[in-house]
Amino acid sequence: MNSGLDETTLNDIAEQSHVSVDVVQRHYQTVLSDLHHQARIHDFIPLLAMKRVRQHFRHVHRVDVQRPPVVRQSSPRSARQMDYAQV
Image (cartoon, rainbow, N blue to C red; front, side, top):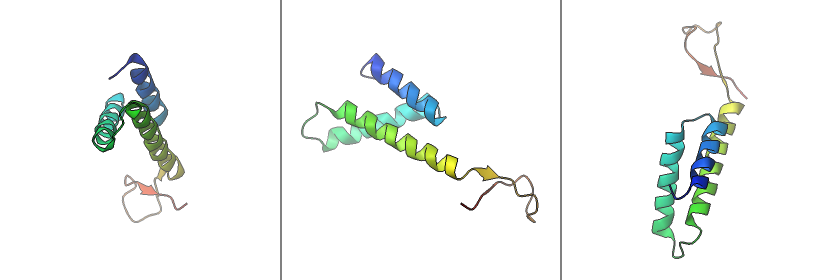
């Protein structure tokens, strides 16, 4: 991590997205590494990486909220199997 602010922001993203901090940190490190390899100017890479991580987890969380798993008991399949509702 570069600063306490980065750590606080990553913790906030993890909490809002309902994923572990480790998952968010690994994604941040991957994005940061990719940006370092692509960039010619490196001044704002941590800021851009944090923005991309936040957008990624917002999208992932939005998809989960839009299509919640439901149990269909009338299905011939086992009642324990999860299926996604048609949106």
